[in-house]
Amino acid sequence: MIIDILSLFPHYFTGPFDESIIKRAKENGLAEIRLTDIRDFSENRHRKVDDRPYGGGPGMVMMAEPVVNAIRHVKTSEAHVVYLSPQGKVLTAAKSRQLSKEKHLILLCGHYEGIDQRILDLEVDEEISIGDYVLTNGCLAAIVLVDAVLRFVPGVLGHEHAADEDSFENGILDCPHYTRPEVFEGLAVPTVLLGGNHKEIANWRKDQALKKTMNTRPDLLKFIIKD
Ligand code: 4HQ
Image 1 (cartoon, protein in one colour):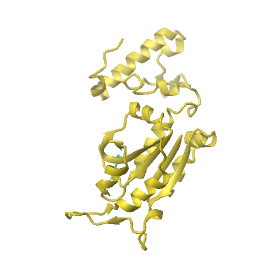
Image 2 (cartoon, rainbow, N blue to C red):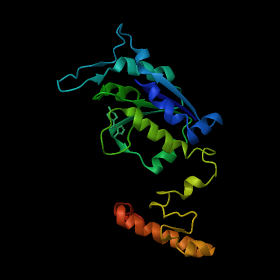
Image 3 (spheres, rainbow, N blue to C red):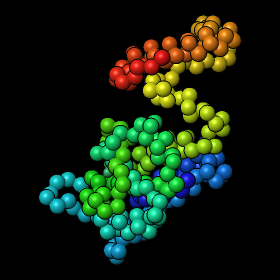
């Protein structure tokens, strides 16, 4: 998968993408992440990329010309262009899995108050939000999206089915996990997990996951009627 990230701060990404699982995915050729500085596409002699909003109001708006030029520079016939913003549909595990099937993703990170609407009208396929809060810029949202999507690319997680057993895959939250020691500061590991009865363990985990979901995210249970 090729991921092009267009932003005003390409250095934002060097830390997160050069550690751990994403680093390994890049080394193994499963993901190629390319960073583009939108300012390189400004045709203004001051490398200006933003201007005041028509109609007035606070802040600055990213101009159509440099952003559209940057997108067109990296765009291929198979590219899927995503703009990260609070106005988008909220990212879910299902959407992340769907995006993981794309051959070429272009992620556009906005800064300031946002971008000229005509960029969306002309070049953007989909607007996605990572949650109902406002960030200082879209780079952080792009990092989250890349991480959530790459987990679903076959081979990125060491153990091939790890992504299928996570939170949200059954529409509910994950169960509690334990590792050694058996007792920590007086708290013992539930005995069912020590017994080796796989059927019993599976039932316990499902029960725990349901209880946890009922308590913290009852909204997730509204639509699931399942064994
Ligand atoms: N921003 N999910 C405003 C976000 C955001 C979000 C990115 C701040 C875009 C212009 N992006 N800029 N929430 O808050 O994706």
